[in-house]
Image (cartoon, rainbow, N blue to C red):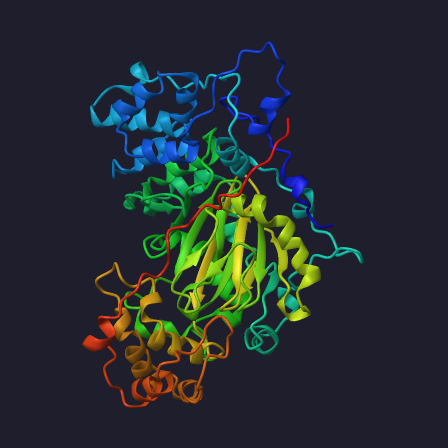
Length: 535
């Protein structure tokens, strides 16, 4: 059954400070006491102004009026104050304001047990603001029941589901020819079911392992956060499970070093996974994961541990560097929405060269703004351009083909996954062209000294593949243009550049190329036309 926009509106909790949508002011009784909300400065502009305040100034601001009290307690303001401290987050409270106080007490060597009192929101009557309420709705929207149950597709259900197959019913050859070479997503059931799914059900196993104690912190971020945060694992798990007032775009633990630094976790998952899914085993001879030939430390970032709370996830994006990916769900459920290459979802506006993308801030905002239009795409678009959806469950592994737009939403309080990006013979030609023509968009290699830098990535990969995988390289070099609609060829001499760089081993880091640096992606932008009214 397809989810409707109204299904998301059944929020679990009212706004903690009593804010209501602006239209509700017309429904109040004539003798009610109402705080004035008519201001020349909107709540969004106030949010920008308040983002420059330090904690002392913000503390004075919230004492001015009821409206100022609400404005000064917006979750993102206190989150950013914490992140700007640039310290490891070793303890969290039930809100970001509480976390700020706990960390400040720790900085000042104050015994937080004697001084800390959790913040208790005061509900303010008569505060009406679409801007403020919109954020609450986007961070507390209901999860549709249609996403939570494994059901077969009904005849009148217009949602197009990603195909699924049991791991025992697919061979490596079938995976390569039916999905990877055709660049089609597929869910492989029970492919990741094993020790990790069993052991990682409780946080205690992750937190108490000896090797984890060597790690100082794990990196967590979101599209809305101004900086990444560094959490101890125990603190992040408290944040995900215990924080009462999460922000609109919750911080998502997305750590690239988790398995490099923790052999126990790696042993929990990968041996059994590679046995069940030999087509993703990099140690076999079928040419999978060609980037491995660059070396573990020299290749771009590739394997991540992902942990997130309910409603966290990723806004629409295309995976980096023209790579395929697999995503293995360990705990919790995830809802995926796919759009084919070259077919951006509603509300997603990439530039022609893919250098910049304008999009909503969070998955909640995209749902509230564009869900109705998204459902219309199943009817309006031609068959090959329609979106797909699916829910993945613990033990499922999803193949994410290169060039596909996709968004993911975590559906449970506890969500853990492992994901890996790779280049195989099926996308090698497009990846080589990407490394030549889209150097400004190459990611995962700029902030580590040992990684090959973007201007050298293409030549180094070609060089190593001449020895390791000459047959696959030769076929890729014959490709004259992008075969995936996610990318377009450079109109200014792309073939001349391709011939020069692919066949002559010439350097691609000339001053002419290195001076043409452009910004890869814009800051996420909010969509302004968002208004509604209901009780």
